Image 1 (cartoon, rainbow, N blue to C red):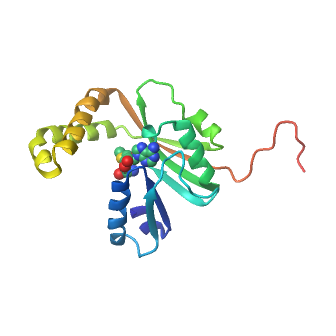
Image 2: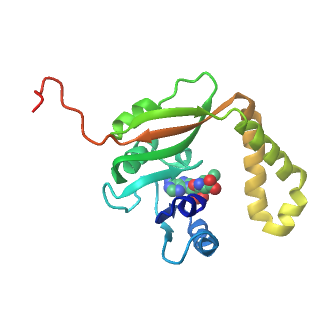
Image 3: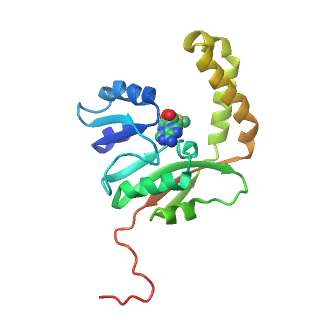
Length: 186
Ligand SMILES: C[S@@+](CC[C@H](N)C(=O)[O-])C[C@H]1O[C@@H](n2cnc3c(N)ncnc32)[C@H](O)[C@@H]1O
């Protein structure tokens, strides 16, 4: 919503969670005029948006949650207009071979830039420790179920964070499909 306001853009947001979509809808008037942002329930591999309709797409800390990341990337590629960019966060084990070039190719996209985000794992570690330190407040404010989920995530993720590499990818859909090999230039 901050980006939509900064860029004077129309925003079509989606999330698998009805709660997330409702919360975003409730907050949108703080950022953009009525009618400029719409949020609904949809999944990364089935957005329901028309082919080539988006002039830009942003996917923050969500691709890893898709059932099939390659299918999700293909769907995000499908909705991008020629020349449009997709900005995507990804995390992987330090030293692991990244699969984003292969996933991008399968989606008809090109990886334009990889930004390393070395401070991100430490940021999550600080956040998770705060959740653990304030567990009683979380239970009081959010209820046992929600607090349990958050604390479970914190304990599960904390040990993996020192070995984690976080990146921000910029991908784009080429304006024209490349000429197949051997086909003459007309
Ligand atoms: C870590 S949160 C990030 C939310 C938001 N992008 C942000 O940066 O604040 C991950 C979000 O992805 C959503 N999500 C999980 N699986 C999804 C899927 N298959 N399709 C769409 N959204 C999904 C979750 O409901 C959650 O809201």
